[in-house]
Length: 143
Image 1 (spheres, one colour):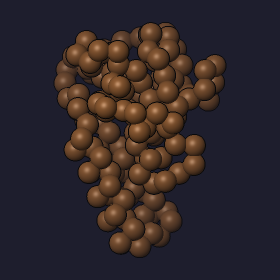
Image 2 (tube, rainbow, N blue to C red):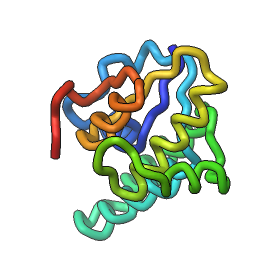
Image 3 (tube, rainbow, N blue to C red):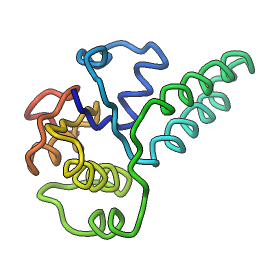
């Protein structure tokens, strides 16, 4: 199963949060933007500062993120992706989500049957609007 995975999905899995992606164990090829690394690691660092987590906990979480990403097929953040992200989408999207969706659109040409996994409602709506099957966010949701 080829699935484009955004940061929200990886973070829920690695952090053991509730309502993790049901199809996670069936993904044979996880695809994402190179953006997933700084997004996830910045989230872990913010948690360290806000929650005062111990160094051991932070080290384990960072290691788990990096280990998971090693198994991903990463789409480089290249001019073609950034140019597509700057173009209009059928629904409202923030900048980082636009880069994720543009990366998924580029990757769709390479990975047969690519679907998209996110827990972000706006990204899910936009992905459905451009023809992706979406896992993780219920249909018809909005922020």
